[in-house]
Every structure is written in structure tokens, then in C-alpha cells.
Length: 110
Image 1 (cartoon, helix red, strand yellow):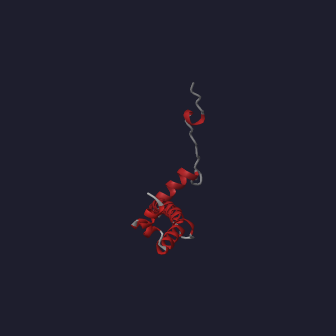
Image 2 (tube, helix red, strand yellow):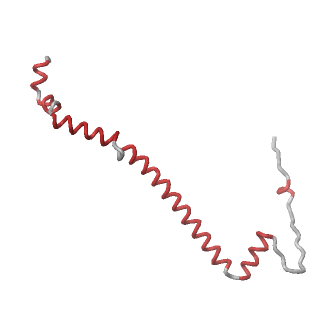
Image 3 (cartoon, one colour):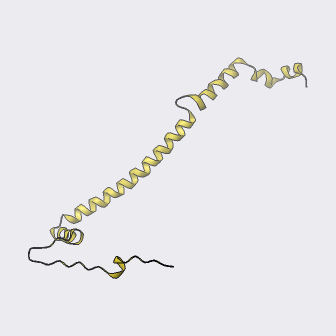
């Protein structure tokens, strides 16, 4: 096929049209070079997904904390929590901490 025959084809006429070339340049610009490009949208979507996962995690933590606060509103549960976690005692009581052998030794296995 020579140049003259190529210029007479329908596809060449469409591809060499100024409207087509301007539209193609606009599409390429919008996809790759604009501030709202496809790459930027993809990066922002990844960040949104990450933040949504973090939101779900924090919501579960909030619900756990609310359950703990509700549980600690009872004075007996609050006393039990303080004794177990902070080793608090009543006046006149003695507190003995018992450590098991396994918890004090570090095992080195061969």
C-alpha cells in the first residue's frame, strides 16, 4: 500500500482529523497529566480504603471500651479490676504476688 492509497482509507481520514487529534490529546492529558488524573484517583482510593479499615478497627475498640466502662460502673467489678491489674489492696491486707517458674525463665531450645 502506498501513501496515496493510505490517505484515501476511511481510518486514516478519521485519525488525521483535527477533532480526533484534539480529543485524543485531551484524553491523554486527563488520564496521565492532570491534577485529577487516573493515577491520583487510584492513590486516593487506596488511602480511603486504608482509612476505612482504620475506622472499623477504631469502632471495634470503642465498643470494647464502652463494654469495659459499663462493666466497671459496678463497684465490685471496679474493685476486682483494680486488684487484678494495679495490685491494689484494702487497708490491713497483705498482697502476695505469685510468679510461676515458666514466666520467670526464658527457655532456650536447641
